[in-house]
Length: 174
Image 1 (cartoon, one colour):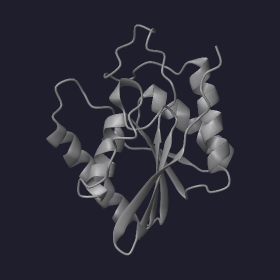
Image 2 (image 1 turned 45 degrees about the horizontal axis):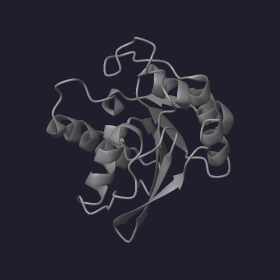
Image 3 (image 1 turned 180 degrees about the vertical axis):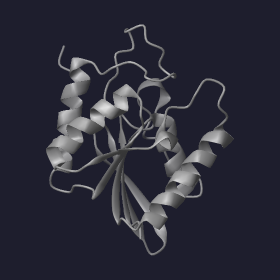
Image 4 (image 1 turned 120 degrees about the horizontal axis):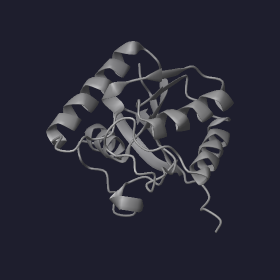
């Protein structure tokens, strides 16, 4: 039974790369993004999820590869964790995330790490709390509810998911 989820937002992408953001493969990480990925991995080292799953976009896959290497976990891809596509409705995103969570619940792993995108993180938080989570204190770049390489930690407690922003990477040094 799934009892613990780490929602890990991809590290800082290179938005100046000229590569479309919402279309695979998407932009790569910046140097700072690589450093953020290592910081997130170091934080997870003492509490590694048993399974690590990521979106197929380059920014999430690179973030996840760095984490997987440091916490010594295999990495699995899941297209349902992809970035929201241009024109994709919130209902469509909610449907694929609902399907992903149902599959995780049936897989029998008690602890998973999902390396994904802001919209997917928001959707998981909303679905698991029935829309009752207060995110007003958690608005970061581009309106996301997790900073780049930030980690939400969720624990199933008495049938209810309890979430906390557990890790924020250090800011970039100019």
